[in-house]
Length: 162
Image: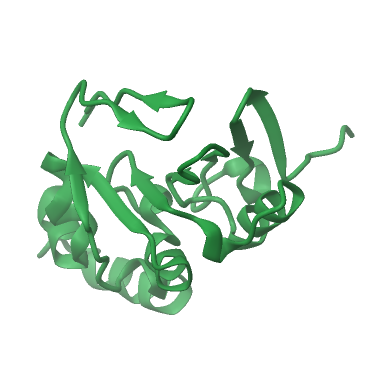
C-alpha cells in the first residue's frame, strides 16, 4: 500500500495537510499557505498532522497568523478553537457562517436539528468523542464572496457555497 504522507506541496506556498484515515469523517483535509501571512484553511486535519507539516516547513503552531474557515461543518472548523488559543491568531469565516462557527447552538440552528428524535444521542456522542466541536469559537473577522484574502505572494478568493 502506498505511503500516506502528512502533507503534500500542491503548488508553491500551498500544502495539503492530510486528514487521518484518508480524511474520512470526522477528519478533513486542511490547506496551509506557507507565505508572509502563515494561513491555515480549515482545521479538520489532526493537530498532529498540522504540527508535523508546520515543523517540516520550519514553523510551529504558535507561528500561525490566520485560520480561514470555509464553512461551519464540524469536520472543517474542528480544531480551530484549540489552535487559535495556542497561536493567538486571527480566525475568519464567511459573513454568512459566523453564527454556525461561533457557537454550537448556532451550528444546531443552521442544521435545524434541535428537537429531532436523535438529537440527544448525537449531542451525547459529540460531548463524549468530539468535545472540541461543542466549545465556542472566537471569530475575529469575516470575508465576503470574491473578497481577496492576501497571504503575501498568494491570494485567496473565497466563494460561499452553502
